[in-house]
Length: 377
Image 1 (spheres, one colour):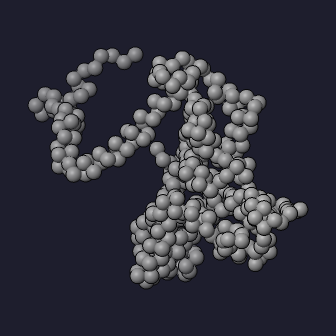
Image 2 (image 1 turned 180 degrees about the vertical axis):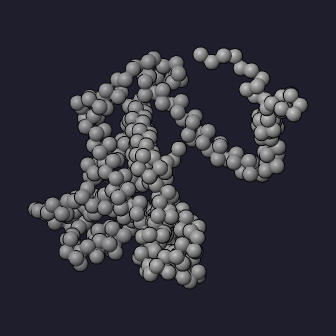
């Protein structure tokens, strides 16, 4: 057992004078610790403009990230339109049991939405995550500054369009031909390739309406006709969603990787050229190892949002015919919470989704830390 602390443990002995004096380094540390908040205040006053610019972001996080957590209590409360959430009766984990093992249509729809959420995110991770890296490598090889700037602006623009505009463009590109509308470019290409038939109207209702106006008796409707187009066919929804997502975000997401690439020292390229490395060898042995830490960090954050699909785009593209492949947890919660009356069930579904996402972040961070010594925290 260690004894009491002595002055000699913290002071330096001076043999010449036979006295103790304080260690200069320890004196500096003590002074910094004593006047810590004074230094912080001086730093804030010195760079006050930067901290003022930080205020809007803090308000956004406060009102749209932290305060809504109060409503998560609804996942454990009996709903009451009069009383606030904190004063409602505690219901335990009844909503979670109904979602997981309820054995009813709600449980079936939730597991289907959870599966679709994971598949859409997983496909986006497999096909969407490499595209910004490929684009950044491509931009790095374009020697003309004007040409590179023009290409970057063209790939960045879709990100700055609203979700409504983006989904409207997608709908126009893949719409089917009817008696009143022309076929979209992508649909026409698929027709020319023989993947879809030409005569697809906008739905079964159009057939019946046209038949009634022209006094035509409809005796047969093919399965393709009843499918009502690409966006109404569940087999095409995931492909449309992923391709449109890559088109929308690949250029904007490449900014981080391109910034990491241009930070590489030119001497690394010169050393590789002296060793006889070509362009592909330089990418493999110089560029990719230099930006691997950025790739790992972005991959961890992407895995963290693996089950966090925004409902806006899905809500604007899906319909009741494509629920089997398009319905996700967010749209499931939106139907039951906003359109329906079961806000507690919707809160429980979103809470489970976020908890799983948090576990994925922690797991991905641990794996990255063990495998490459690069981690998010």
